[in-house]
Image (cartoon, rainbow, N blue to C red; front, side, top):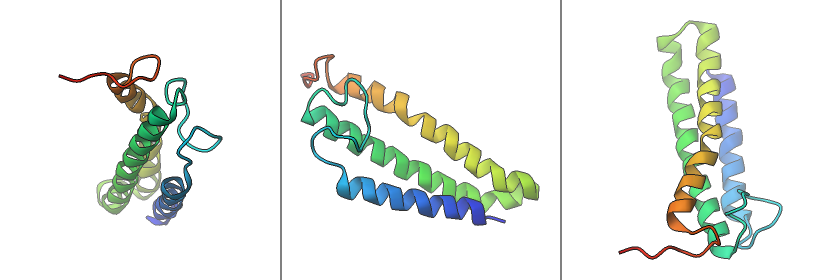
Length: 115
C-alpha cells in the first residue's frame, strides 16, 4: 500500500520540475515568497534555489519512507506516516530558508560580507 505516497512523490517531483524550470528570476506570483526573499533579484533567486533543494530532499525522504514504512508499521500507519512526515518537512522549509536567507543577506537584501 505504498501507492498514495508514491503518487504524492510523483506529483511533488512534477511541481518541483515546474518550479526549477519556470520560476522567474525576478519576484513574481510564482515561487518562494517572504519579505526578505522579494527584496531584490538576488534574494529571490537565492531563496527559490534553496527552497527547491530542500523540497528535493523532502521528496527523497518521502520515497524512502514509502519504501520502508510497510516493513515498520501496520498497513494504515504505513500509508499515512510518510505523508505526515513529508508535511512536517515541508512546513520546516520556511524557517530553514528564512534562517539561511538572514545569514546570507541583511534586512535590506544586501549580501553580507564574509571574512
